[in-house]
Amino acid sequence: MASAARRYDNRTWRYATSSPAAPSSRAAGEPQNIGELVGRLARPSIHQDATLRHERCVLQILRRHYRRYTPELVEQVCGAWPSLGEFRGLEQVRFLRCGLCAMSWEFPRLQCPFCGNDDHRQLGYLHQEGEESKHRVATCDACRGYIKMVATLGPLEPVRLLVMDVATLPLDLVAAERGYAVP
Image (tube, rainbow, N blue to C red; front, top):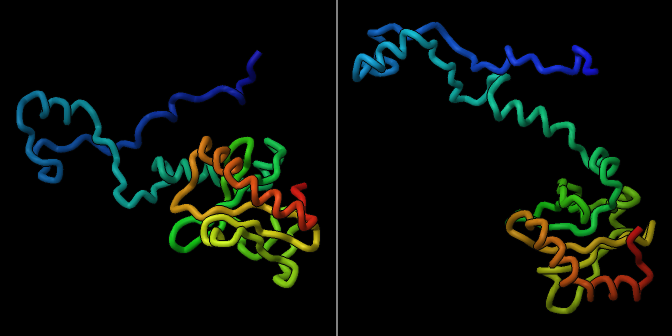
């Protein structure tokens, strides 16, 4: 039995409208035929927001919807640690990626994703010779954790994320040889 509080009120689903356009309105252009004139008089015009700032604008609705998806919430939902990191774009902004749900989130370059350590003296990188600009391992001496990092121009597609995780297995071996582990 559904409660009234859990039902959608489809009366709120309508477009925001203004009063019907006047037949002589130059803003919308002159009607080209009688059908267009009748249509303008019979239906109110739909409000348009070119600034995309109106609270009912699709962009603003999506912002409100996705604002709740924090790294902490994603971790609670799927329960997984990040499996791979990306240095994205020319700016090389650091993003972490979940191996289960492929969610990504921006994360500070100088912080361990596992213990939160931000002491630069305890953070480092391991890499294979000649590959440091493409693939490397970010390490934390405080918790002995590590995460593999790859350079990309944009976010990896979920399938490519898994492929990259396998392709960088030699980095897992380098990290394990030095006593680092993934929690």
